[in-house]
Length: 124
Image (cartoon, rainbow, N blue to C red; front, side, top):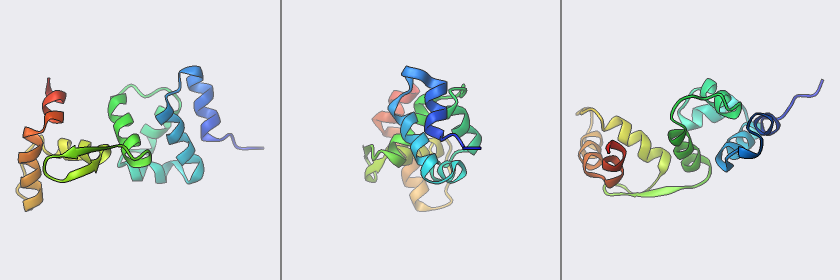
């Protein structure tokens, strides 16, 4: 019995509407494992599976940002850190929703993210 690749699964589930970042996600899963890919994305293997099968009902824009940042090299200019991946930006914005003084970088990023145009756009 032959295993079906993640790319074939995604194509079967998405058809002609499959976004390029979903194909990249599937290719990465074929190169390693779904669990390893999920870990690199800082997301669950279930989320990855649901995205590949076109069954994810959550924030697909967030999935796109993370996949593009981790596997496709998309970056943004952060007012505090300079050029960072969209995945790192999204993670800092999530952390920045609540204040924590656990370390100086977290405090600095809390302040920076609150004033960042991307965070303001997201809040609108």
